[in-house]
Picture 1: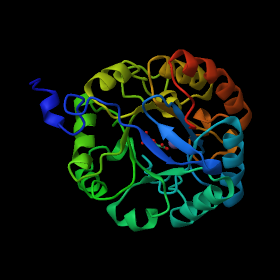
Picture 2 (picture 1 turned 60 degrees about the vertical axis):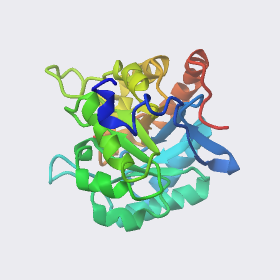
Picture 3 (picture 1 turned 90 degrees about the vertical axis):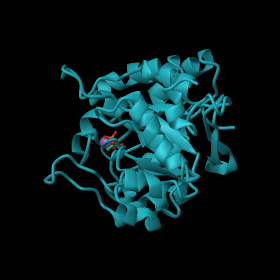
Length: 283
Ligand code: PEP
Ligand code: MN
């Protein structure tokens, strides 16, 4: 047995050769799918800022072809002086946008005590800063919701897979892995997008792998090229930050696409997904 994969027997392809496919009820009664033959796009603002903002962005990204809506309510910010997110109120607005558009929603959890608030959230995100919050991972292993697990800023592939394993040992096997850029010596971009981890993860694991080109680059002008590259490299999906007025965004405006730029990107992604032999997330 390969000594590496034996460390993560639930996440390993060795013990589960078939791709894990995560399927949820999507907008207009159609299944929203990530994994296998489906490449789904998750889009929305970094943070929920008010009800009109999240509802308007939700309608725009849905029209452009996004299958899931994102929006942070509990924000783990590097600085205590930055906007910390709207918390519970933000979650309520996100769920309002879900009701209005039918898009399933994904939002970040930062503490175990928040789990009770996430009943109507479709996918729970564990951010880069919490990838090794083992108490949180273990608790998420006990619930029946897909988890989007983002790679830590300086975590190896094995550490990411072992973090997934912490959730899976509790019985929750619906994990989506997310590459969102790692720390390096160069600062021309916010992070360095490690595209090679896509085929590497897909060889080691059956779990779907998505890419977040927004946090990986930190600059909206770089997002379209990296989104296309991620799909060409075999990603099962993308998470893209979209804001109605990026200059005024309370968080991550510099890396956010306008709804118009997002729609143009979505049109151009069609041919990349076809070349990769995948469909764009809706069954
Ligand atoms: C986010 O998705 O807004 C976020 C905080 O991402 P990360 O954990 O990758 O920094
Ligand atoms: Mn963000």
